[in-house]
Length: 112
Image (tube, rainbow, N blue to C red; front, side, top):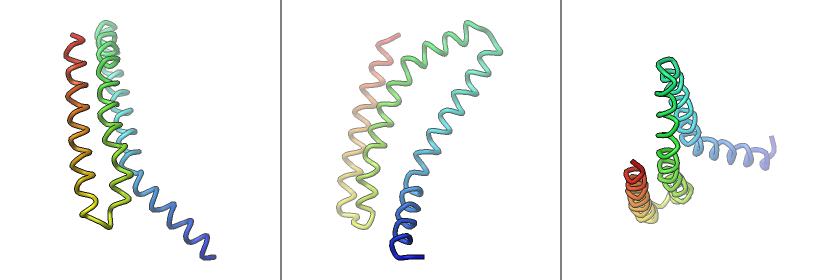
């Protein structure tokens, strides 16, 4: 194995390990929605329709908040060897996620 192919293989493994939690989160969210839909579909059509309307309002708010937090992750991953550089990134990411989450909660609350 050449040095270039080892470097490429190592970079791929590092990216894959960094992306694994994001991928698992997406799979779990999809599986949860599938189970919810299946359970409500067995109960009544009106329950399934109410769930669809609720998800139409709730999903964009949740996706925005999680998107903000996921967007911060690459910057944190770049700083894994420098904790002093990582602390402000984590703090600012938490405040950004909190702010966007509150705005999303207000939007969901206002849609009632």
